[in-house]
Image (cartoon, rainbow, N blue to C red):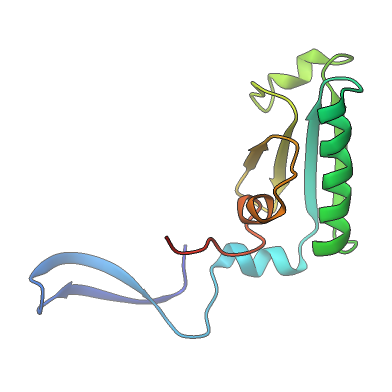
Amino acid sequence: MPTGKWRKGNKATGKKGCEMKRTKGTEPKEKLKAKGQPWHLRLYIAGGTTRSQVALSNLQRICDEHLAGRYRTEVVDLLKTPQLAAGDQILAVPTLVRTLPAPLRKIIGDLSDTERVLVGLNLIPRKPA
């Protein structure tokens, strides 16, 4: 839940109900947790395919550059252990699953678009449209 101040309704627009107004200098609790908490990432791959190898090297690069020692990765080869796909509901490979910090996040693909991966992991904010 975001931090800030609650206010009821808006007299100028006539809107009723409660809304959250973010106070300057505050960050979402998820971001605050992420700063000190270790990251647990699980990469699901299918054997030694080219896309799997590219995803693995991209994950290593992203973690080294942006998480600097605050992460633990696990690589799950679904050709060897297909029963593990059911636990995280994996439908396509390669898929990266962030289990910590909460909430769970999934990114499908070879992780070559670094900016999209960082937004997906919530390491950087999403750009406004």
